[in-house]
Picture: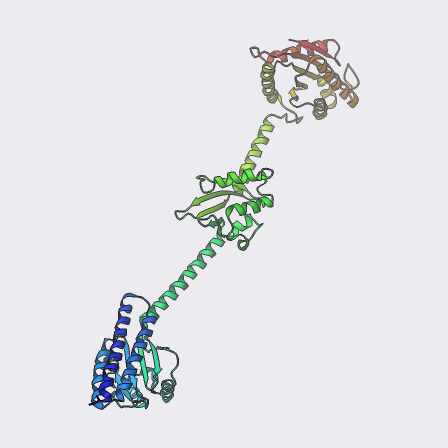
Length: 508
């Protein structure tokens, strides 16, 4: 006897339902071990669609067989996650099956959710019992929900009044049945919110950091582990105006140095650029002390360079322009002070102190090189009478004019004109022999004679004249350089006794 059609179909349908359950359980395992909620939910949906198809086919079988299959599937659906609900409606929108979680969510309407009840009746009863507060009892909301049930769209995310979120997936089967799966995705939404909040906070912190770096009075730049530029602030950009951050970002430190060299910076590298570049790269990341650097805009910076544990390099430039300027001003003041201490206040030429120092230095140099050292001791004839006749102011002017004329009589480096005291002057002439010294002395006398400074009370001439004593020798380190001054003074004494307006020569 041929087996009834329902008997032949049951094993195949039960197998299809069992496969759906196995797939659902696999999705549950996936949910347990992976933080990827959407993929397993899709797998669950596919599994339930298969289960729904099986149920729909069972519905076509004799009642006794359908009831048994539905009971089994209803019991099996209870293995769905706690936050998931399932409902199946036939082509006439009548309830076929819901899982236990659905009934627990809507406890007031649960007794009414029986197979055969229309979806619209269940919806209206749930709204009336307050099971769906988001509807606020409005008919427009009910009509919108009915429309979405009858014309399913892509899975939707629905916000609940208690700050919970559902993902609703609805599918119409080939026989017209409708499957609805709701999953609570509140945790996922909250994680996404927290992640977005963290992202915004990170952006805000990064923005605040950049604002702080841009407002800092120091220059700062960052290079990555491959020594490529990542960032520099506005102050650093002012120091190197030949490229912007956008132009420099991603370029290596060596490339940026070459750009600077192309613009003539630093000036001390011009002419030997490659050697300077090689040295700079060899020292990269190894400096332990700051380096003082000058920039084209007139600023001076302390340059610090630090390599981080991750291999990045941070360089900092601190403005020390004011300190450098103060130091330069101090050095200039010291130079001026030294010059003042070595300069005669009245005539502006070297004073006796400067002469004594220069004489000692040249004496030792002459002894070391075996070179002749010559000294001219010069006196203005009858200067006391000049002061008495013209006054001290005129006398000071006369001293200044004589000093200027004597300064013009020395030409070579190392030669010195100094005021020795009162109306006496000295010319110190290194590496000068007797004949050259005589020529210099005569030149000094001729220059003053051409000046024709009136001296009405002078018994020697109608104008100011000079008497000069010349002394020369090859210095000996064992003797005192003052011996040269004494010899010149002796020669000057002879010139005065011989009638003045002349010179005499002595040799040690």
